[in-house]
Image 1 (cartoon, rainbow, N blue to C red):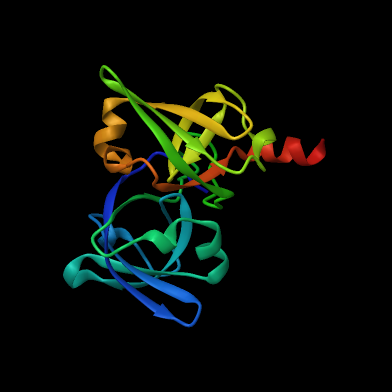
Image 2 (cartoon, one colour):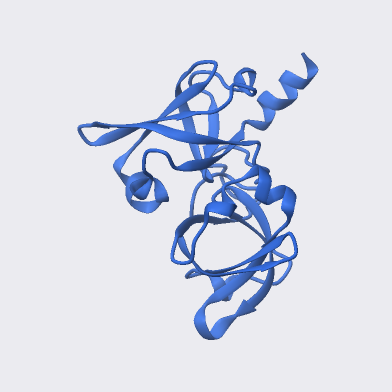
Amino acid sequence: MFTGIVEEKAKVVAIATEGSNKHFTIQCSFTRELKVDQSVAHNGVCLTVTKINLSDSTYSVTAVDETLKRTNLNFWKTGDEINVERGMLMNSRLDGHIVQGHVDATAICTSIEDKNGSHVFVFENDGSYKNLMVEKGSVTVNGVSLTVVDVSDFSFSVAIIPYTMQHTTFGSLKLGDTVNIEFDIIGKYVARLM
């Protein structure tokens, strides 16, 4: 369980393929605090730490075929920065919203508008999840907890403050980039019941 409050931008330092799986080696400042079997969100994808190398502050995670098909992990390259967050502590404030780290879909960035300090990003997908979003509701984009500004059948927008632009990968996001989307868990259950 996560909050969508990104701890830092980590770096992908190595990628290895084994069968249909991919192993990613990640470098970040809190590697020394991790342990094998711990869950960490990577651009919103919950992956298990499988190996830790303290000499270069790296750890490894593995993504299976299902994860690779459903997320943007296949687009990662060595040197890329990604948003990372460790699991939520149950005795602390929930500053974002309830995030499972289970990506529902991907979307394409189709517009980035500078609003004189803030930025509005528009993302499009195939419309199959149109009933899972509401204006001013919660959504997670590449692991970042955000409020939906506008929503239509095939797109939605979010507004990004300068702090988020600097401290997450939103600062380097470009038109045409694919992002991971996790819809609000409460909305998903309500939609299922309906």
